[in-house]
Every structure is written in structure tokens, then in C-alpha cells.
Image (cartoon, rainbow, N blue to C red; front, side, top):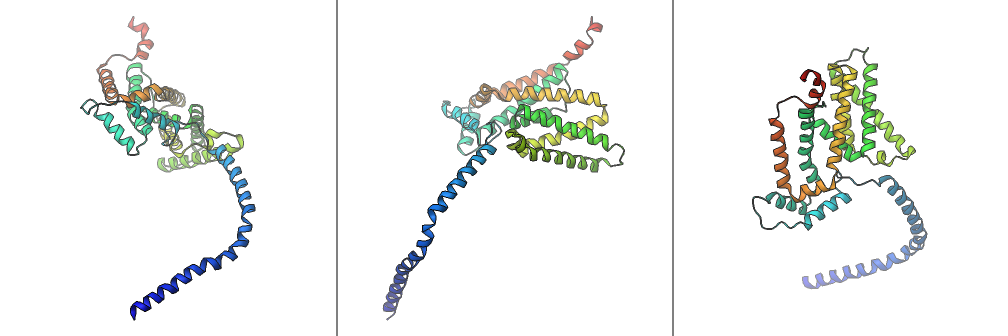
Length: 303
């Protein structure tokens, strides 16, 4: 009896499932008649929207973007390189290839490996040549920000932020503000200034400003604290000179990191690259004489 009941229930359910699409089809026909017009209008809107998105989002590929043409080019370098059998002399190459196959962006690996080289260049410029800057890592960070924004756009934003910071400092001189609240107020006003630039960037047609990411903007904003601290300990002309030398080091590092041949060399020969950077640091450490600019400054006394 139970089996007959189960069979009867199954038959009723099947009949209901077959009947429900047939009942739904007439009601669906009026809606279907309006689909061509809706689809054409949707296609028009999609085409217009596609043009707008293409205009806004289109950006020159750079090495800081995880998804870009540069990433694909670097990955092709790795694929085309013959590694051979694993040994202590190519273990880093195996690690890089494994990381890339697991989804780690190749350009991120290149940036991480190039960052010590940029720091070494800054150390050479300060220790041997005698240039001054906001520490060692600030020019290196600024060079990465320039890579992400583009050279001219990054320099323009950097100078704009420093100008705003200087003007705000001059305005707040007469107001008694403790140091930490003052810095927070600086950040607020500078952020509002950059926000206003981003708002007007579509009107002036600047795609480099429209597509700029938050990462380089944060780097540029955070550099304001070093600049303001420098103005407190030194006068404005000295602060401007050190700022100019910092920017000069960042521009030089930008061109070094942007060299495609160097990026390829880092991926193909990472072990040799690490040894060369380490050797350069050790050679710089051995130098204890006068800096080149000091020799030039005191050349008459040295004679």
C-alpha cells in the first residue's frame, strides 16, 4: 500500500512540473515582445557606457599595476628562460617561477628586488657624492610613486602638496596648535586639496589624474611630515634645497627602475643581481673620505 501511495505522489509531482512551464509560457509572451526594444536600448546604453569607461579607465601600463601589459611581458621573460637543474646557484629563479605560477604578479617581484638597488643608489649619492635627502627610504618610496603616477604627474602632485603644506604652515604660525593636532590639520587640508584636484581632473581632461590610485597619493601625502619637520629644524631655503635633491634622487631612481633591460635581468639572474647589490653596499661602506661635493667645495683649501 505504501509503494502505491509513493508512486501516486511521484506521478502527481511530475504532472505538476510538466504543467507549470506550459502555464507560464502565455504570460511570458507579452514580456518577450518588448525584449527587442529593451535589448536595443540596453545595447546602446552599454555601448555609450563602454566608451565612457574606456575613456576614464584607460591608463598607460606601469610596473606597479598587478594587472597590466608589463606584467605579461615580465611573465613571458620567465617562461622563455631555461633554468636547468636545481642548484644553490639558481634556487631563487626556481622560487620566482613557482611564485609566478601560483599567481604572484611578476612585476611585484621585480619591484621588491629593485627596491634595495634604489636604496643603494640613494646611499651612494649621499655617502659618496654628498647629496642630501629625506632619509634613505623616502626617495625610494617617491620613485615608486612616480612609477605609479607617471613622471610629470607625480612631480606636479608632489610640488603641489609641498606648496599647500608651506602655505598652511604660514597661515597656522599665529595659531597656537600642539604638534600632533597641527599635523592632523595639515593632513586634512592637504587631503581636501587633492580631493579638489581629483574633482576637476575630468573637466581638464587629465586621464593621468583620473586613473591615479590611492597608493601613490598616500606616499606623496605622507612625505609632507618629513618636509614640515625639515622646515622646523632648518630655514625654508635649506628645506627647499634638500627637497630638490630628494626629488632629483627619486627621478634618477625612477629611470633606473623603469629600465626594461634591468627588469629582465632581475628576473633572469636574480642571484647575480642580489650579489651585485650586496657587493655595491660593501664597497660603499669601505669609503670613509670626503664626499665629492665637499671636495669641490673645499678645493681651494685642499690645494
